[in-house]
Image (cartoon, rainbow, N blue to C red; front, side, top):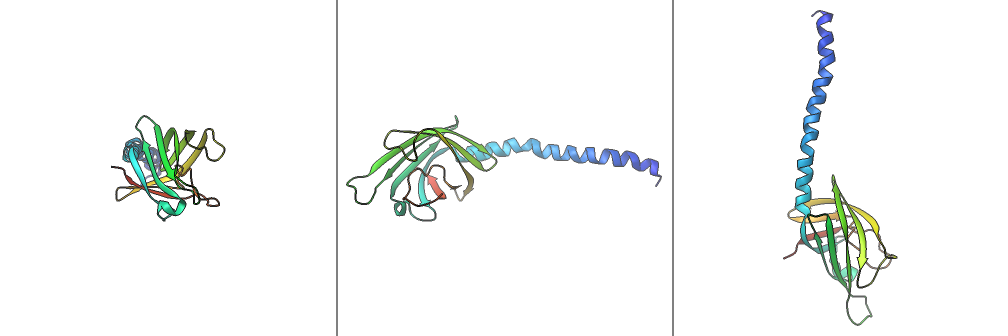
Length: 158
């Protein structure tokens, strides 16, 4: 083959390959939208750090992730030695980028944990068998003293 014929091929091959890569990138917003749609709804904590929530003194934890970019949570917990359970409510805004869930947290009502005020928390998200897994769990506002970041597993709340 003549070298003169190779120059156009060498010039246009990278451009053609970039066009193929560009097509794949164009479909990623749809995939991101599908992931986002999957996490929207009401969820109940079923495991925290692969243990039942009660092992962390949590009686129940319900979260709601809404399509408008806001979220709420309600956690009932029982500190050993105290008479009755306490409730912690929180809310804020959320975003999902690839598989990272970011929560802007604004605690309200009940007690305030970790100094209060707004803060940003993140965790990796995956869906498996209809369950939502977040690691570390940015919704985990209440936990036993001395425990570090904990992964959370949620099922759809009824």
